[in-house]
Image (cartoon, rainbow, N blue to C red; front, side, top):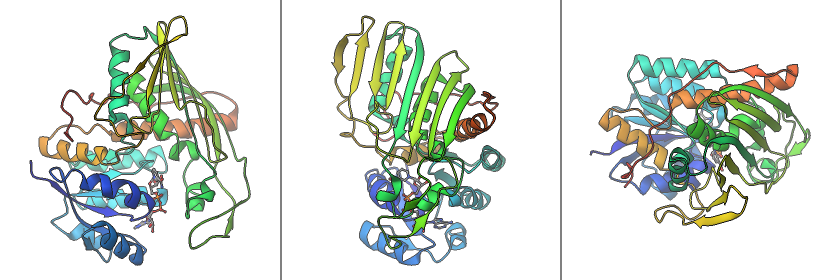
Length: 366
Ligand SMILES: NC(=O)c1ccc[n+]([C@@H]2O[C@H](COP(=O)([O-])OP(=O)(O)OC[C@H]3O[C@@H](n4cnc5c(N)ncnc54)[C@H](O)[C@@H]3O)[C@@H](O)[C@H]2O)c1
């Protein structure tokens, strides 16, 4: 297949550390044509240091380039909706970092735009495409732990401002930490068990005064305007019940994802591949440590898989696996958790999505 020519918009931390190196690992599927950042110096450095190709002077220049077939939107959350919308309107396929938009209404608008133009729209995280995440999913479907009834997921990261130079942007735009950090457990949970019908949430700000501790604005104080600490109960439409916990308030070593069934349980990392899979029998004893699939990354996330799946979907004219419908649903979960926290009552969710296709024997990136 001819590689899909793409441009990166947003040349920050995750473009440099995550996407660029992993997209370059799949030259038969992806060709990086150029890049743009509103901070021109950053785009120039990105291109020079990481082989980012042509440096564009504006978004309009990227979108007017007929050589660019797809855009990787790696901007911060405030750029997700406007950049993706502009790219779709210009006839480009898009892979966006999560969350797909600041609200589920905006996500619906992006989906309508993509559908109207028969363009592919895909959204991070790529983590459900990992070998371990797919392995556990296949074993759940095969009945290895009986009837699943409970799923518990966490993504409680360190104090973001301790290591991220733009931590304030994350905490002053959008819905809550659940929309930015919890898509890792939530996207794997909803891949395994489908949409959530009802949520009950607790959302609050636990660290109201923060100071950037790194980057060019080091020392700048800021106050989060969205919840930095969220807990929620999830009732999946298929009857499974779940719990999610996420925060920018301090590190947690609670296992990132556990799935409990009538005959046993699995534990794995919903973010990184190759971090190990554990299983318990009905009696609660650890029955075996499942061998890590040999092709899995070594306790890391392969950021290239989502864009490769998008490229493969473009060329084969099939649905993407990192579905925008699922990403919209994850945003609606985060919105529901906030609303429930405000009102003290459970919130019924309305969006639905078809489950992604399992990756199968030969993955698009192999
Ligand atoms: N940093 C991580 O470890 C990490 C991990 C997973 C996902 N992500 C996600 O990736 C996205 C980007 O995060 P990051 O950490 O790379 O942020 P960052 O602040 O390091 O980089 C974002 C870049 O986008 C640019 N930008 C923002 N809006 C723009 C616009 N409208 N047009 C052009 N450029 C624009 C900024 O100038 C900046 O260089 C976020 O959605 C984040 O949730 C980040």
